[in-house]
Image (tube, rainbow, N blue to C red; front, side, top):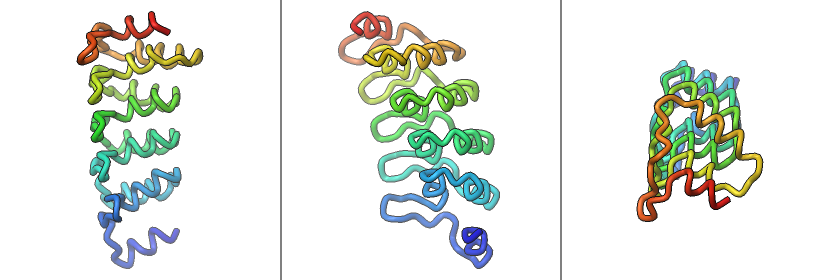
Length: 167
């Protein structure tokens, strides 16, 4: 593995590119599980954020790499980091419709009540979706512990129930 050879020769695992991505972020982007494992074993920072506030977990979730998400969670990645829009890995999984990733994040204990900068929770985002297949996403969210069904969107005061009634 080329990455291992470079690390063995002294390459800096934490070096960041122009958007503040490390080698771990690039491995997440492309779903290279073996490289992700290597980076974790060599002490890569799991919770740094790029220029948009995305964490390694968000990048893996955004690209649908379930195996990488599981590996990062197992390694101790923080579940509830918010990017500059206030989105979390859970919100990304809901928006991208990745039910398997969402279930992993819910089971790992992600906070399902965090609101993004628009005041939306993951449940609100699912409830206001026009997509007919979003029901399974909603059901996965409802499996989460301590989910507050009555959080209201900032500004409008709408809850997930209000959004679901509109669709």
